[in-house]
Length: 494
Image (cartoon, rainbow, N blue to C red; front, side, top):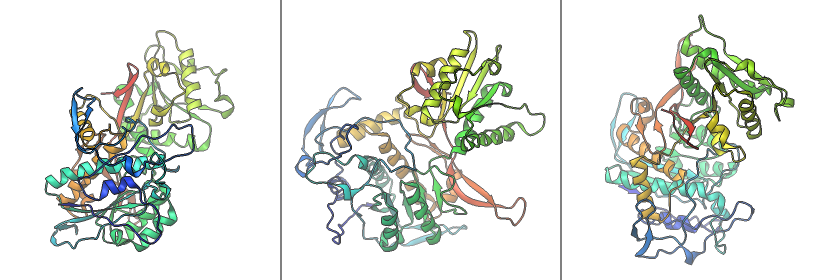
């Protein structure tokens, strides 16, 4: 049975996010919110009490089927449709929740202990630590605080997964805590909350500095921490309790090189970057992946195009023809997410090529977020990118999820709702199947979820005991989608 109980903290008198009251007072009551205001203003407001009360029996149009359906719990207004974008883990999160909400942890029975010390329990204590920013909530406002949307949507998807797990007989005691996207507040939670102290699994938080805090806590307390959003390789070290869902930049570079070598001749690969040291350093990931694939003997050297900052604005005087193969396909790999630089480079490549030249450009997932580039260049230059997530509109699973989500909430799911569903479903099943040390079994139990495939592998380090004596540093999902831009949209390359 899935337990999601909660009680307010009476100490600070801060106003609890109304939406979370609707989400958490019972497992079956999950209401949503009005859509956010225009991005042009800095002021963000919230939904009033009386505007979010459920209206039983409301009939609405299901956009998937074109039919009218009855929504038992209907929000006042539909929220925005899904957004395809990866959010920076170094900036302030586009979300938050309200004041901390927790459960009274139920005692659990140890049913079995396996060879690696993983305990099979009668039920598991799970903490969702998300940045709802509930202290920003204003009951007199008419809209939900904009930066709360990521956490609220993530939690809405997680709630749907909990229903599935409940039907499968997975027993979880779930606590939901607001991190407030604050290092000091997270520190206070770690010191005072029994929910975290007694957790078998923590999912969250969002910001990098908050993840670092919780990763250290998880290592010290021997609790498994699943990070949904962190993508840095420097979060923690020598911490096998840390599970990273979001692949690192190194993994993105490896996936791109693997796909390029699968389809094109290495002698026609051109690595392009600006001359800044931190950007040039990214090329090492591609060289390491290349040498690991083809071996170190008799290898063809890759071409490099290093562009000085003074030239990167327009690239007017640069001659690209020496890099373009006349009788075969030329592949430009551009590990940059500077939109102005990428735009100038694509325009220069397009101007330089002849009609008979075949050119493919590989870029980074941030290219999906660009809004100033002429997407005609993406089409003409056959742009490919790596991406941790992909929403396939033709997928039956996606269609079914959207329909269920719309039936439940009267709104279309954003990508973070699917992410919350995927993560809660997968890791709920894993801890139920393998116990408290389930992370050691992740590599043998991959799964295709809504947004991506989970293929976790241990990231190793040498403990200096010997040249080939490696131990587990942490676990990382190594699967990435390779997407191509075709017919003016990104779609699976293979």
